[in-house]
Length: 136
Ligand SMILES: [Zn+2]
Ligand SMILES: [Zn+2]
Image 1 (cartoon, rainbow, N blue to C red):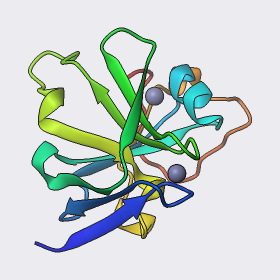
Image 2 (cartoon, rainbow, N blue to C red):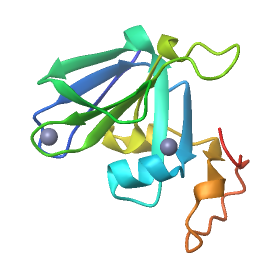
Image 3 (cartoon, rainbow, N blue to C red):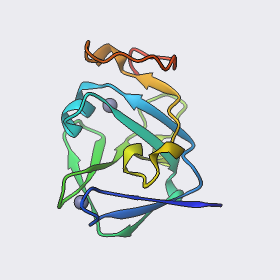
Image 4 (cartoon, rainbow, N blue to C red):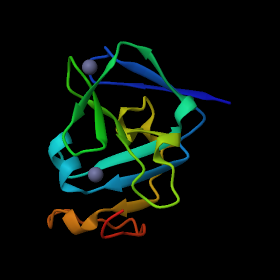
């Protein structure tokens, strides 16, 4: 399977994924807005064994119980998101979630949805016709 590289802004943290992302979507939740300092974030996921840190070390920030946000300790780029199982019938810990924009070629992560549009900023308008969900 083809491997794709990614990493933070300064280059201290590098990772590799095996195969293209299995899923990708835009999250507009208020927590992501604040954690990233942006209007929304595009998350992508691969199986947990298919996300390998190849350089440096991801640091973690915990605020919301059960949620671990991974970032570069040098430049602050948000890299990963990990949640305990929140959704019935879904095993979140089986997947590695990462910020699609940190891929060397983010175009391989094609977003399929907008989630948490109940938190979407009113000055963001999309014409991509992707399905939207008030929460996840
Ligand atoms: Zn960095
Ligand atoms: Zn979010």
